[in-house]
View 1: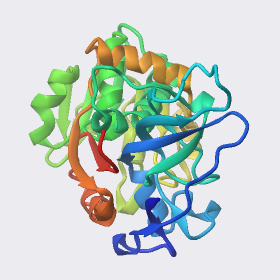
View 2: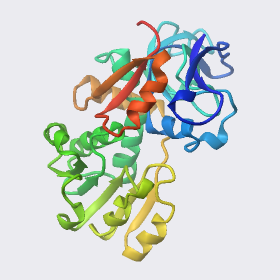
View 3: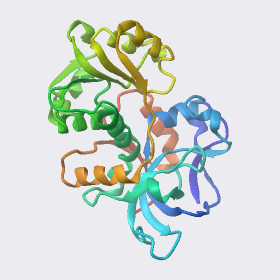
View 4: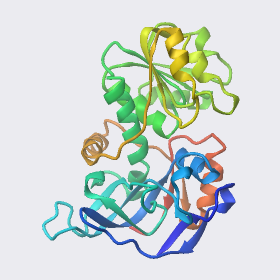
Length: 318
């Protein structure tokens, strides 16, 4: 099968296409023909030598989420029979990633694709939306009257977090560039702060929860400044891997609660998200689609930091 893989970590150019063996499912796993795969910041970090690169066995096929069609099941009466259109997350890096024509995936990490979405649209959902659900619903417990600040609201995780927080009644504040403001208001943000021209800590006070999708990485101090706007006893959630190792100590000094968050593949939550997507209660925005052979270019585009919503690889035809 055709796959996009790395033989070493480095710049986007190390990501290249090659022929590899089709994986073999065992026990409770499904074999899925991949139609499209999501491209996420964690993929680019891993390719560059950060992210989950310490756990890789090279050469490695990258990618976490996908949408495709079941081609082999653990047993004949499986609830997701051969031919079912599904979407989900692979247990990368413990198995091959989703930048490939076929993946094996545990049955519990996949569910039926949202009927209203194409495979390309559905491939942009799993990792980002599961992360947003974990942040907004399971950790922040979004509810009516809650003031919730989301940094990088226009990104893959951010645009789902804005919608889910608004759906559950929170007063949503998002940081983004000015060109995304109108769109974020349409998604449910009550207030959008232009991070290129305004200092959010000079505008906000007594925020209940900050979902920080930026952190203090690469000289940024978004995490540190966030501590100034959270009410006493409020909650700070740090998301990007390695973006601020000292956030727990900073939170203790500021008198607020704090936690990191790591996404967990969950077919049941994906089924709930599918219902929300099919009812148009939330939506996925696909910024750009690249062919599998241009996976390196997709990473280069993502690392420019101007992606609205999700970037997707088209692996095969529907």
